Length: 133
Image (cartoon, rainbow, N blue to C red; front, side):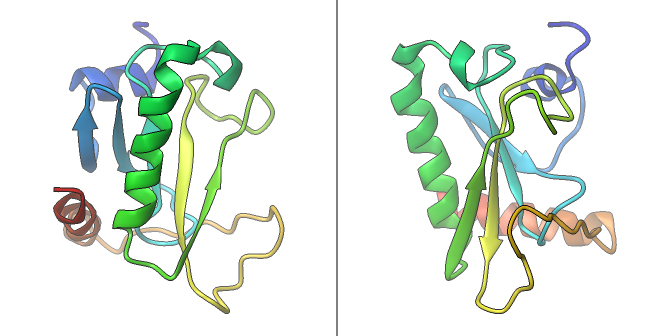
């Protein structure tokens, strides 16, 4: 889909801090992370929401989400999908957010942070990518 930011990232036309790129999907850092290391996992085909993803693609897609969650190296994770409401990009994406006890995340209030620099963002992407190899 030509006007879709995530399709452009999948195609390699828009730069992103990629952590994984497989037949099942692409994972990259969220540019406005809840916590540093927050990854978005998107399926390769353009689908707007979870109900549009063909059932045959579900096992591979969620296996990739599971791998990313395990690669974050955090004691816990928050995994979430918004469908239409609060979905800033209309391409299915799963948030995989590293969690630690006492991190301050409460309910569905998602405070956002920023990476201090491109090199800091790249270092987080490199660590997750290395854990996924």
